[in-house]
Image 1 (tube, rainbow, N blue to C red):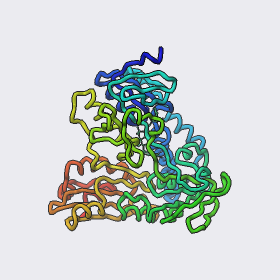
Image 2 (cartoon, protein in one colour):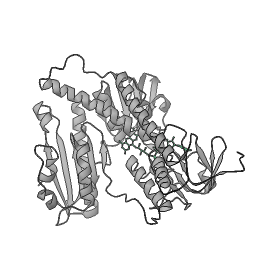
Image 3 (cartoon, rainbow, N blue to C red):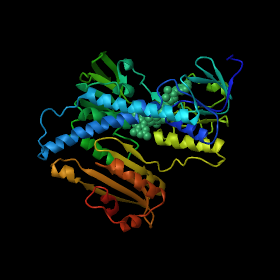
Image 4 (cartoon, rainbow, N blue to C red):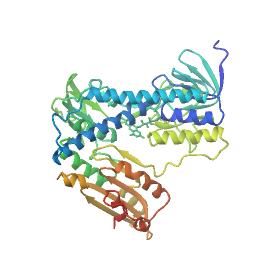
Length: 454
Ligand SMILES: Cc1cc2nc3c(=O)[nH]c(=O)nc-3n(C[C@H](O)[C@H](O)[C@H](O)COP(=O)(O)OP(=O)(O)OC[C@H]3O[C@@H](n4cnc5c(N)ncnc54)[C@H](O)[C@@H]3O)c2cc1C
């Protein structure tokens, strides 16, 4: 094959993660000839260094907490309750390999040409592979994801980023997590439950700045009870020491204690470097994300971008949904297809989990002023109460108007991750408080609190 004879496709996809795979499958289902370029493992961040291995570790840490509760409740739980990390990680990775295999089979069945290489744009219709093969396509989908940022301080390279968490084969004795967002909160909770002693250093005045403040404060209280240290308004100035013996220095010159591991979770940056975007005329915003319109079109109409590389609601299901709609538009005869980015439900897999959909109380007050009505329920779920543990759940409903339309639902507590999905449908459909009250409670559950709040 000569470089002068590019291979022709209807669609070339850059990135075989959540968004890229979903876009490739949907386009192929509409009959398009598709090439998918992925230099790493199929599944991208979510499958390999995000949602999936993270949730596996969260399950392990929940099991650990439940074993401790079982022991308090009279179960004869002998010996150490510590996790055999290596055994668990072997199971985790076997599960992940299964996902890789399933993607490979599906790509094959769909007739999608998988190219294990990175790609870059040569012009608005040409993608060049790592081995210099050129592909021409009527449409290009960019789904190259994002990577962890490092703060611009001396010694930042001594620390790890979240990717390194997934290479751990045991709990480091002392861990510092730098950051107050969901990744820092999730990793801190897991590590603490699985045997590390963890301190969080957050620049913000509290954890989870995007979450409802009351729930975030309750979660902080839960984390304190679990022994996690937290420093807020923390200004990191340097990371010092040698690997496995690191300390943080703040802007006032104060040194922290020593940590076996420092994990940075201070945000992520779009993977756009080396993509040749300038050659194709694709515009970036000030943060380096690809600018897209409501239909995921970049500044070049037939080049779409989805997922983390756009910086919009950086979650797997969002990347998938945006990619499918973009491909329905490009190849499925649905010119109006687009994703509604409002009321996207989210879960922070903390201990306990925090699930939310819609507006926080503060956002609702900003938008609706005085006409906001808040209902809350604080309670000890039965398991925690039976074991006489202090962990409380906090559920909160945010309503607006005389009809009390539900615009926000925020759940912190055991089971919240599984409870929210159905209520997210209801909120999207515009339910009111009266609709909740008309629904018969399921007793005894935590979920029933949602329909009983007054
Ligand atoms: C620790 C952590 C936990 C998370 N937990 C959750 C969660 O619980 N739930 C949730 O919904 N989301 C979670 N996320 C976010 C989620 O992983 C991302 O939003 C999602 O993976 C984004 O999908 P994407 O397709 O945009 O990018 P990715 O899935 O990252 O895929 C991008 C792919 O593009 C490839 N690529 C890069 N450059 C090129 C190139 N030049 N050519 C070809 N390919 C290229 C990369 O190798 C990569 O495989 C988590 C993220 C992290 C880091």
